[in-house]
Image (cartoon, rainbow, N blue to C red; front, side, top):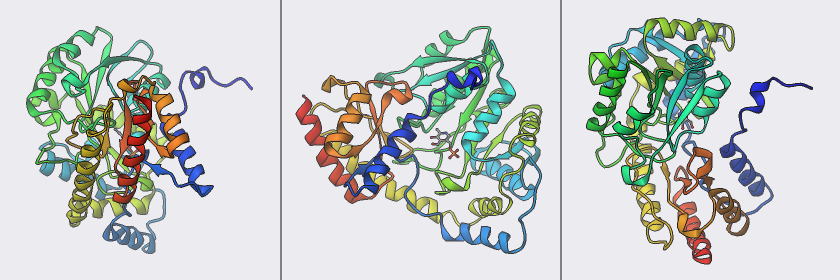
Length: 388
Ligand code: PLP
């Protein structure tokens, strides 16, 4: 069979492959400590489930508008205004099948052959693949631990060419957990405005922050950057609703309308009754978000402290999300060899940094229980000691 050329240009997700291998080993009865998960380990809060169950019982089971249920679009616009200081109307919002789908819709609506998209590395692995599928070119900008794995204003300026259309900003970041300060964002915003490009701000981890760090949306800094910003967000991480598949985009009307057209010919509306759960997530009590955040904070501390006592590993303290991104260069192994050997010999699953464009690192998720963290860190220490 002759498949379309675009298929050969993208790689299957390494993250999913390692997670699947760890799951298969667990199913065989092997005692695996898995730090590969990209999702909270908590169940969706009960009041959110109850709202979806009520909508289901009431017959909210039919096709709805491709743009999303009006009640949810309004709730999202209200959230963006009150929490993020972003002045969008409901018509500036599209409800999508998750944050990933938001970004895919956006890139399809915006990027074509010849367009360049600037992506700082380490990056969330789907960004470059989406750009490739749309026929565009990713311009990867390598960052280092010295700048907290954040792109500097000089790096952004240098990466911009007349073909640059979009810059992807992800704060808090997957995989590094780093968060841009307001000053850092302002410097980037000045360049985006000066060069007149667009920025998509992937804010999916905005609710998971530590040590008093505040989430700032780049679009809220001033009117000029607001006009060039598209917000991508969703319910998966902050509300532990990964399987619900609900995300959203907010941005300039013309662009949002284009994504609605694309969605109307691809997936149509997001599951109707699930959207009522999302309305409840936004309008109901936020205590559940704080409870999960506090649990992540405790785990972060334990895992971070342990990793930094292991000779041969060094790790920056993340301000957000639920990942650590230690440097493994002292072991002399590539990230893929490190991850495979760790899984084979010590039954610990981590994600090789190469998946995120950073072969000097591995990613560990602490979205798992404390017992697994303690046990897994003992095993990791044993493994690293045997390599250096
Ligand atoms: N953006 C980032 C940085 C992510 O890590 C993820 C999920 O792992 C997403 C977007 C997509 O989230 P979802 O499609 O589950 O809403």
